[in-house]
Amino acid sequence: MSIFDRSRGPSPDALSARLNTYPSQPFRAVPEPPPAEESEPEYADETLTGEEMNPPFAYEPPRPDAFEPAATPLAQMAQPVTATGMFAAQAPTTATKFYPQRPESIEDTGLPRASVIDLIVRTLYQSTELMGATIAERIALPFPVVSPLLEGLRHDQEVEVKSQRGIGDAGYVYGITDKGARHARDSMERLTYTGPAPVPLSQYIESVMAQSVRNVVVTQENIRQAFADLIINDDILDMVGPAVNSGSSMFLFGYPGNGKTSIAERITKLMGDDIYVPHAVEVDGALITVFDAINHAPVEEVGPDGQPVRPSWDARWVKIERPVVMVGGELTMASLDLLYNDVGKYYEAPLQMKANGGMFLIDDFGRQMVRPTELLNRWIVPLEKRVDFLNLVTGKKLSIPFEQLIVFSTNLDPGDLVDDAFLRRIKFKINVVDPDEDQFRAIFKFMCNRRNVPFDENAFRYMIDTYYVPRDRPLRMCHPRDIIDQIIAIAKYKMVPATMTQSLMDRACDTYFVSISSK
Image (tube, rainbow, N blue to C red; front, side):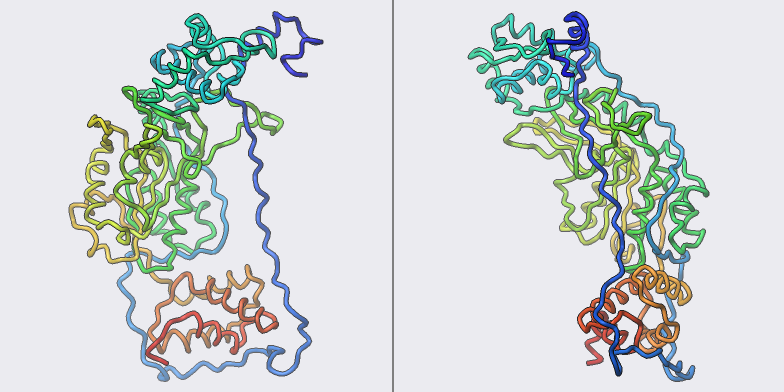
C-alpha cells in the first residue's frame, strides 16, 4: 500500500509521522551478473582419416649435444609466479571505525545553510515541479532536514505549492516562482552542480584517516588463500604481505608476460572490508566530486533474509569495496590534479584521491605520454609525507591525505627509469622473474585442462626442444595460455579436434613467435 494512500490504512497523524522520516535516497538493487561458464569448444565430425585423425604424438628428444646451451638466465631475486586460474580469498582483518550517521538537522550536515538552499533551488529550477520527498531524495538529505528550508523558501516566495500527492509536507508538489528562478540563475553563475549534497572537507579527511589502508592486516594464512591458484614461491608472498600491511608503496618489475598484473589483481583481494566515500566534497564554496562509478564498486545493503534494503547511513556517502584505480600508458599529469569543469564550475577529484583507502596501480610505468621523471617528481612528497597538495583555480592549495597502496609495475629496467632517491621511497621492490621448465610445464597442463585440450608430454618436449632451446627463447608465464588458444583457433579453422599434434603445434608456434632472422 502506498504511504500516500488516503483511502485506507493508518491515521493521517501516523502517516505524517512516517513522512517525516522519509528515506533520503531509495535503494536501487543492481542484480549481480551470473558467473561465466566455460564450455567445451564444438568441432566438426571427428571421423576423419589420414593425418587429420591426429594419431598419437611420436617424438624422440634430441641428443644433449644437438643444440647449443641456452643463455644463462638473469640473477633471480625471487622465484617466479604462475597464474593458474580464478581465486577466492578470505578477507583480511581491518580496524575501520568510520560510519556516516544520518543527519537530523542542517547543522549536522556541516554545510552552510545558504549552500543547501542554493542546491534545492537549482534542483527545482531544472525540474520545474517536484514533490518535497523527491527533492530530499535528489539532494540525498532526509526530508526533516530539507523541510524547514522549503518552508523558508515558501515564506520568501521563491517556491510555491502547486498540488499535493500525499499527507504532510513531503507530499506537497513544489514549483519555482519567478523570484526563485532568478535566485537559481544567480546561483548557477557560481555553480551549476545538482545531485547529492556534498560533505565538508573536514569530514572527508576524517573518513580517509579512519578507513586508511594501513588498517588492513594481512597474515600468512589469508595471503596464501588469495594466491592459492598461483604457483608462487613463499619469498614473493613474504614480500607482498608486508607491502600490503604497510599501506605504502610497491615496485613490481620484470619481463613482460610473467604475471605482474596477476599479482596486482590478487593484492586487491587483500585490501579488506568495505569503506564509505562521499558523492562530493565542499571546500570554501568549491565542490569536488569524488564518487566515480568506473573506479568505485558500490556494495549492496541486504537484510537478514538476503534481500536488498534501504541503507541506514547518511545518503551523501556511498558504501563501496576498497577502491582499485588502475591506469596505464594513458596516464597524464593533468589527471593527477583537480579537473575543473568550465561548464559546471566544479571539480572532479584526481585519480589518487579516488584511490584513497585502496590501491593505485600504475601499470606499464615508463610508457606514459609524460617522462618518467615528471611522474616520479609528482609522487616524491605524497610518498614521503602521505599528504598530497591540490590546487583550485582560485590559487588556493588543498592538503589531502594520501592513504593508499601505490603500486608501480613495469617491464623496463628500473635503473633506466628511476634514481636512488626515488627507489628509497619505494618500500618494497619485487622482481617477477621467468619460470623454470617444471613451472612452465605445470602452467601448460593447467591451461590444457581449462581449455579442454589433452596434454601430451611428448608434444610439450618437442615444443621446448624446437622453439625454445635452439633459439635461446626465454620461458614466459603467458606462453602456455597463448599457444593453447592458438591451437584451438587453428583447429576450428581446419575443423579438427584441438589436440597437441605436431602439425597444430608447429602452426601455433609459427604464428605466435616472431623470428624474422629465421625466414
